[in-house]
Length: 118
Image (tube, rainbow, N blue to C red):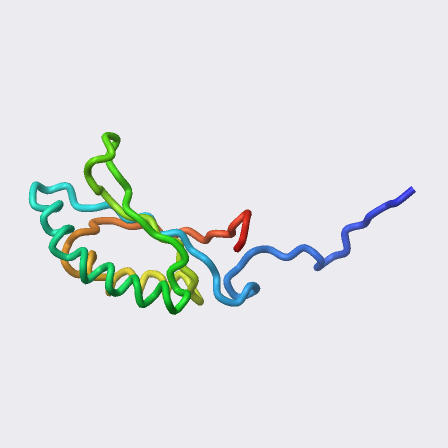
């Protein structure tokens, strides 16, 4: 009969420091004023240019727009990023053209552990 015992200290909890750079999900919601879609379209090239560099550097792993229920209007964004800390993610977001130019009104940063890592 095989018996497995839990050895104290053998359980590792996910933290960004334990795993090196941690992964985080960013969920950002756009402003809802009448001019918000126009601001998004005007700033989008700058946002995507910055994102392209960060994808190449391995900082952004995935990203895209959140659509309304009809699928016709962008109302926010989701990104999965790899950074050293949640504070680094917050700093990164605050410098994004979508925040600087009042496209994203709110955002949430959540630690993320992929079930199917690449």
